[in-house]
Image: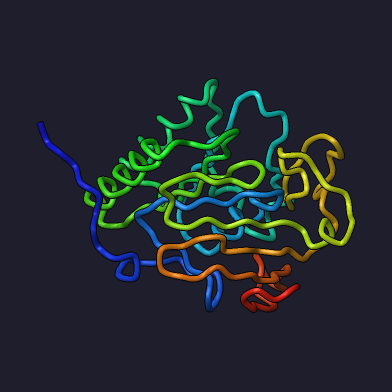
Length: 232
């Protein structure tokens, strides 16, 4: 029986996807983003990458990404959507997609937190995919609330600044996200504010840090400010 071990190569030696001067996500591992702006973060990441994006979601979730709202971030035609009937089906799909290695970005819109063993299995699958294609895939887990999946390479949280200023607080389904259509409002983008508070909550090779990001003139988002421990 073959025993697979986690790649011990330091994260700093891995290829990364850079969203800003101080915002980089290593490929070949699993990352997490939580809070109400998590889907906007995923779209921003997709826009910084090339190739297809596999978006794994729950079949019972009523809300869906709205293609016209996705355009400022990434081409909707790049996205492949998979709706899973059960949570365990979602985890299996993540693993198999990473193990195949054909899709550079796998986004999983989870309804709960995977355990440490499940995250490690995903990481192993990503390593297998990299060995097949030579291009390490990247997995991004979107988790509700404050997140907290164990074993991830980095954890980010993102929320609209309007929410922090006393604006409406949307539920854990994340309807404040740009490009996300569904109840309660069903419009192009339920969050009217174009600025977000992004926090790097943990990372193996970088400190905790806060960022303010906003819509870029062309596509995606741009970093406005970054200051450790300072209010935005």
